Amino acid sequence: MPRAQFGGAGETPVPRLVNGIRQPSAVTSPAMHFGAHIYLWTDRWTDESLHILDRARELGLAWVELAAGDDVHFNPELTRRRAESLGLKLTLSPGGLWPADADISHDDPANRQRGMEWHRRAIDLAAACGCIAYCGAIYGHPGTVMRRVPPADELPRTAENLHSLAEYAARRDVLLAIEPMSRFRTHLLNTPQAAMRLIEMAGHPNLRILIDTYHMMTELRDFPAAIVAAAPRLFAIHACENDRGRPGFGLVPWSAILWTLRELRLDVPFFFETYNTAMRQFAHSRGIFGDICPDPDEFVRQGIAFLNSQQQSEIP
Image 1 (cartoon, rainbow, N blue to C red):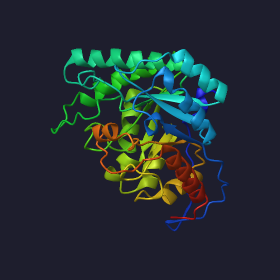
Image 2: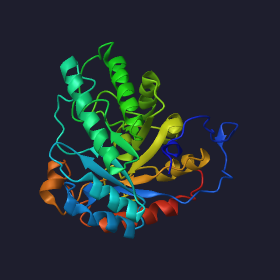
Image 3: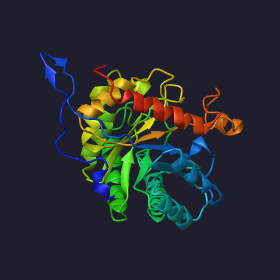
Image 4: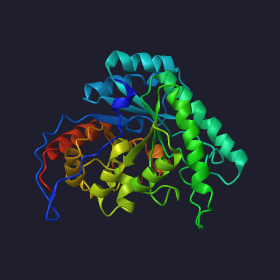
């Protein structure tokens, strides 16, 4: 499918209001599209992980998100061929070893350059795998939180570097989707509205937004307003609960999210993202101490069933 069909830009329909009250939608909900991050099944992608793609397809998934890093090594051609044979779409995001000084927003120009080089290699890997998009907190480095009044040039220099990366990715037919994260992971972008402002500063049509419901539970008071703001560039949604558990067993306002997407006529994939808690050392290394995903297949099955049941929900 052409990349332009994912996260389109342009005029965004606004939910109907009468006397300030949201009105029922006459829009028919399209079939939902689901994906999952490989961390539901494994802590690292290798050439021995290809069976996970088969399992994902058997579970009814249309997308799989791979994770890159300096400690991740595999043959991208093998992954691309297996995904294509199954009719799966792929995305790639940083998830493995990512040096903290490889940061395109860093105060030090040398570290900004390291970040550019690191992400270019990841984009090359995404292209070699046939990925639709390279996603994540590409604008900074997760875990780097500067508790200060930001320098006046911090966002402008970040936007300039994002523009350059977006152009680099566009030449390789890969979208660049930035993911706002909670204040505990980054100080740069905490909301979809902030992501849209940075995209406007960067000024490149190849930039998109990935919304993660786990991170947004900390930052948002109004999920519909955030989705409306991001709509012109919305690529996908990472779907999990406030504790990274499966959708439907926590606090995320799913009916409001799905209703807003339906009103806006947005057809975006939902990626289940969490960490396999049967792999205890892996889960603990990622800060997950509760047993929220002991069975990844069941996580996916229940997540799909719940979100499909919510798709036709009335006005939240």
